[in-house]
Image (cartoon, helix red, strand yellow):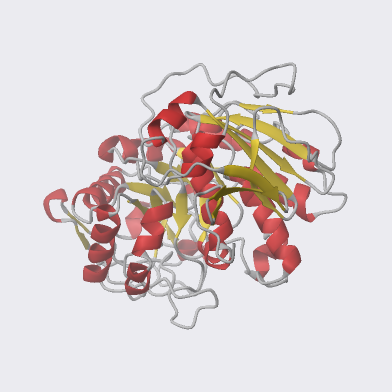
Length: 499
């Protein structure tokens, strides 16, 4: 794990994190975890990682609004990325044009994000900094070669060569049902089986019931780990095929972390996890919607964030949650505009900044694996990096226990136990500004405050660091500072200029 040191905070905050106390905060840890105890391939236990989604929809363009994320551009950000993030999610890297979600040849890793060599150099640079890389795995569907139903072949070296045909396309795909298609109304003998999931009409849906398709997919994910040197997977459009196949592909490859894009209600998400035998994490879309309703919509029902019953944590599956505020699909795309935090405003807008940062204060202090969106990080990097640093110092992890105050709907207060300490995060204009006993103000922003208390282990770990500074504590504008001689430091150990 990379060292992100809050040198001041570790020393000045209380000597013992202690147990969560029922008398000072109402426990609301959620439903019991599932009784099954599977191997959990792709689900690291008590994971302290923070993820960066290192792209957005048009960021392969050099004039992209929030910065270009071609491989050679991201290479320039390697130091900043590795200092803050344990995981980086890349876009689909195969050939096919544009963002890459209708790839044409998976074994050709030269796409619009850049050539294969640049990709490999970027992965190596991130690995040198201790950061793992997730590949975007698009195996529900595929782009064509020259007609509706023909494909380029894939050569995965030691894992085999494959040539998909129209017999590997789901039976009721548009390629067979639209009259303009070259394979319109083909005989059933020349089609695959019925789709095991939801149809996707943007490309040819592949038949994962077919053993050849299964072999092709297993070869691909193994090749991505062993040859391309990715560490894990983000599976695209997993609504499109049964969860049992995702389980099959993870069991064949054993990624460090797997996360499924299953854009559905919490009950269907839980069913999907069960179908994978709990061998993946999953994006917590229900929690994203809860955050949106609590923070962006009047009357600002922050109370809905207390043990949200329709989220993975509320159902007892918090260890499988990858939490997020926005992604490439929900951000600034007209068809999904109602779900994005910034609405029709710019990220430079003060109201948008307030909303987005309240959401990050929540997910970066909560269990699960939080995923930061690249445009948000570029726009608010200093504030987001401070929250990440505090999370790491306290040791909040994917299975952290949460206790939450009951009370008014227009504010939120939750206490979270980490491996090395605790935080209390409070949201809303009406939030209680009283400093909890034994805690100190760590970070305060527009509409949120985070208090922290380190345990004895955290103090022992950091007290011998040469960067540790001791001095007089004082609060200014709701934030904790340390005066040591003529120098003033913030709670993260950064020297404040002009003091």
